[in-house]
Image 1 (cartoon, rainbow, N blue to C red):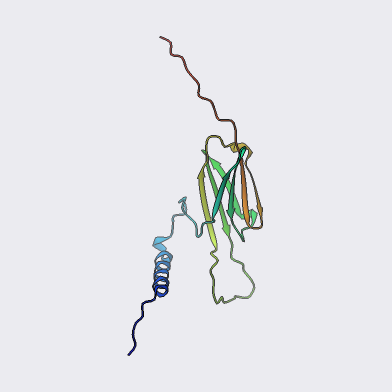
Image 2 (image 1 turned 45 degrees about the vertical axis):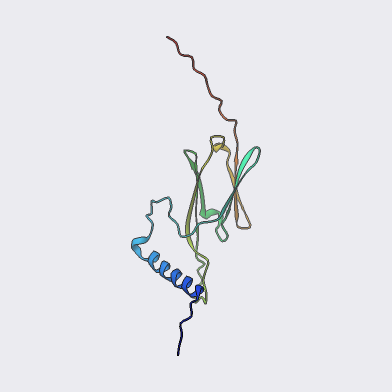
Length: 146
């Protein structure tokens, strides 16, 4: 007699396959104008130092020319794309886990961030964005005449 044995890993694999099927159907694709668009999301660390903020984003396999960083109304946006490697011969993968495509990350910067002096560089697949701090604007007292 063939008994069914409960396997948590089998259940997780089935769930993963079902979710993959659901989210690859056209009706579930994100809008091209959506801020949560993207095929993958790079992991990010944000560090605050005395004179600056530093954002580290893991973007292995992404060329610097394929990264776009903008600042608009104190919102820092990092967009990019990891392109598939194309070769003359089609290769059949036995397993493929690296996600290709676009990504978008956004962060609201504090008022102390100096948007005019932001610098970015990539080193060994890690994007480093340095955001200098400015002096905070001091409150202004306004006298009321009457």
